[in-house]
Length: 194
Image: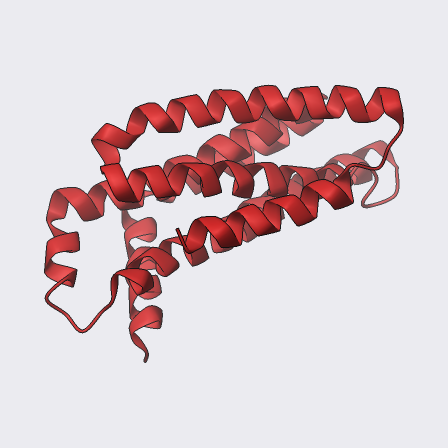
């Protein structure tokens, strides 16, 4: 097992112990919001859950002294950072899977095609990954407690910008998804190496 795999397994075990409530709550909330027609709330909740889980992992690492202990191991700082970025992607896949299951259930219940309305998933994935790409460098540099204000500011600005982007793309009829997707991938990779 490589060092990176070990760090990822450590984070998965921490998620299973400390963050399982997030996942246990995510499924019923997603189903309720989809069945009541409040998909946008379920989408925002997804972004909050992913950012909360990553922040919780980093907070437990900081409070337990893991960051200092890890410095004594043959593990580079880049590997520690990379493990968190990979966990971000893994959490995205799991929670998008929960949302997709809720959407398929709603569509089956309503007698519509399985994936009708699934076009929002790339935007949701991009918004969440883009937001965390802006937050994670602050959390790594400043620590969890000092970086929390940056977390709140980036979250508010991201939500405002995504709402404005949706409004503009509906009025102008320009496919902004591809441009936005490429921009967010560049932002994510750039953030990883900052």
